[in-house]
Image (tube, rainbow, N blue to C red; front, top):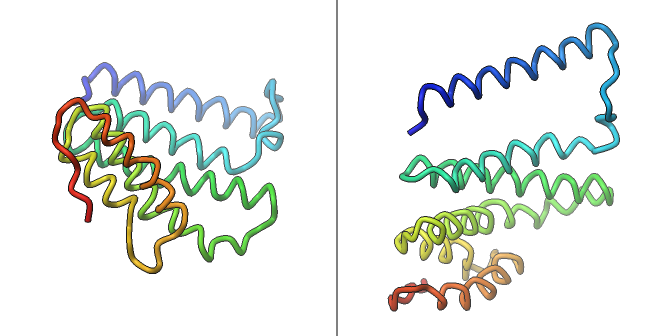
Length: 162
């Protein structure tokens, strides 16, 4: 679990960032970079990547929960970045399949591989390889990529495919 010192440092960094942004907004200060030049989806992608990294580092059920949440938020941010760059907002009609089955499965798979937990990487493959008629090409593409990777596991046990 998190130590008291690490939570205090993290809290102090967040408070410091808030003070700097408040000063910029209140006093009209200029930052060395322009927020509008990086695009608004970065404000969704960055917390998602942070959650994903924290989740992949943490062990136990809290780690897998954070990894899955980070994978979902990062995927939503990447979809929003694509849509913002191309103005293809109607892609939500089929992009939802990248969020729930694909990003959850990919996050579970990564967490299971990094922590050498076969009970978590195989369900991750099952999540990413939905065989329902509504499954997208992307989730099938993930399962096509993940099958050879799963066969490289150090133990001889194979994943049970649904």
